[in-house]
Image 1 (cartoon, rainbow, N blue to C red):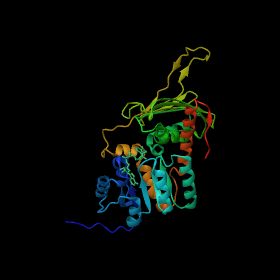
Image 2 (cartoon, rainbow, N blue to C red):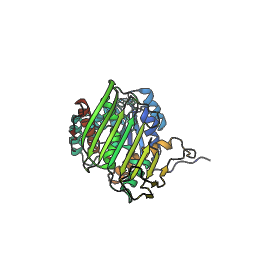
Image 3 (cartoon, helix red, strand yellow):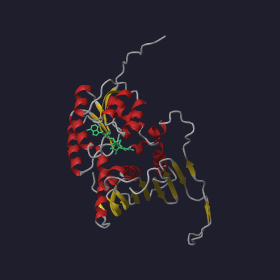
Image 4 (cartoon, rainbow, N blue to C red):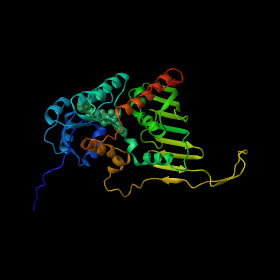
Length: 356
Ligand SMILES: NC(=O)c1ccc[n+]([C@@H]2O[C@H](COP(=O)([O-])OP(=O)(O)OC[C@H]3O[C@@H](n4cnc5c(N)ncnc54)[C@H](O)[C@@H]3O)[C@@H](O)[C@H]2O)c1
């Protein structure tokens, strides 16, 4: 016996998908497929094969080769923008001016000019969402780190470290403004604003660089970034975060393995000898079990924090609430990238980070 689907009687967000490349199709479109609050009304990519594949996936009989065509014909009220880093600020601006909510893959801005233009447009359209995909904020593992460092027993964080070591890039600037931008957002999320940076660079060729940056936070805490485009995406330890307070340390390795160790259970009375006798506390260690998750792709779209902000994007449009990282967050992260870039090109000169 066959049945007709019941008529949809609840509002859903009319979503357009702009850019159907690697990240969109292997990650974000999977997430969209899990979210009932979205109704995908159109897809667009100048690459016809990619656009057709995305259209088929969402049961559409048409696809678009430009955002102009998508806006005119499919009339989305919101778009997921996942194209090229240098193109996204301009496209986001056009889409907001057309009255459409945008969820932009990072980066939302690549330059001061982008920031200025988009700021004006956002202030001209206060009802629209202009969100940037800082997905690590939504990952259960990074959230657990934040709970620990804000919770009882950790004390005031005094040190932050972030390592990000992926593969070669077209430009060294892209390592900072596109790749490491997640680390800058994590620093702000975990520790507050960075006031000053001093950075050094080894650059074998354009886009093949190691960068070491010391930073001082407004809170008085210190920190360090190691950022590399001479690493491997697939290598263990490509991504690492560490936060320390007085006799407390929490680390998150590869976005997954979390270790937290607090003060020793017992130690010798004297603090004057280097050879203190310590009875270590038991570390808390969290590593997810991958053997028992039914939808394989669910591992990274939820655990890496891609699914949750897209769900929030839909809910915020429907309810009027606002919970996602904003243009200002994107600009604040870019300001850190800019200060590091200038300092490392100027022999490590200490530089203030522009405030938003
Ligand atoms: N948050 C994350 O973890 C994460 C991970 C990977 C990539 N990204 C971001 O996702 C974005 C895409 O990266 P990718 O690796 O998928 O790149 P990609 O090159 O595979 O995909 C980009 C797609 O955009 C399309 N495109 C180009 N111009 C367009 C236009 N005017 N309108 C519509 N589509 C257009 C291209 O044809 C291509 O299919 C980048 O901004 C990148 O920084 C984020």
